[in-house]
Length: 291
Image (cartoon, rainbow, N blue to C red; front, top):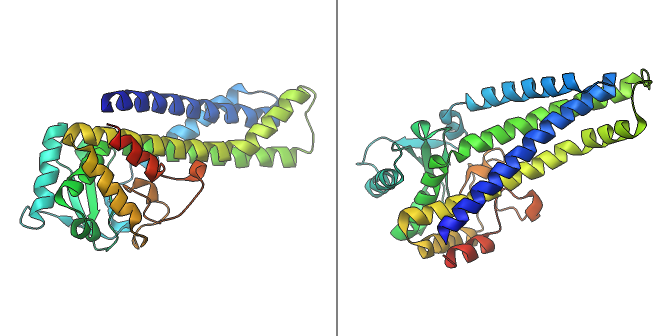
């Protein structure tokens, strides 16, 4: 069952990323069509802007994220021995280098992973996770985070953020072109194509955010299935998710910019599913119990 989920979620992610890239290039074409009536240069500009933003985002250090969440590094097995040895064992099972381990002093149970590749991976857990959950449940959560590192999910989410930023810049540029052109140079612009271009410029930022969140939710399902592959214990992960979801207290150190990294929504917001950073917990639990 979990192998089927892994394959399906990987296919869905490839499809979403492909659509994301198409939207980036399409809005680039729309922007220059509004300005000049030509779209080729816009595709090139969009590709360059998206590429630059992606490189800048990927170059950001893991340590920045950890500092944002006030996490301290666990440097040896003498400090948090169970946590250390569990991450070590799961890393061996996942065939990746052992990630750095961090602790966040917060009573709300949660965890997250970061790092753009397994070589730079890091896992952070709250003290609430270590104190409230059983050993099997903690292992399930850690396996989920190790899966994120192994599956390059942080790199993927970083690229998605960069593409959203590029789309926002291009959309703003397109609206400025439209407002300040004053209808000039319209002889070589087809009215219907012009309308489509304007609609795309207006809607693309919203669509991009929705797609970014869809990728994030899809990778959570994939990490759940991959965690079960590592532990062979879907029930422990389901119980962990139930326990974490039932705690109403948010993670105080978490911010909206890092919320999507966490195992479960750390802000405890009840957003509409379309605009949620995480899949519905009940659906995640249902899928885990069906494995």
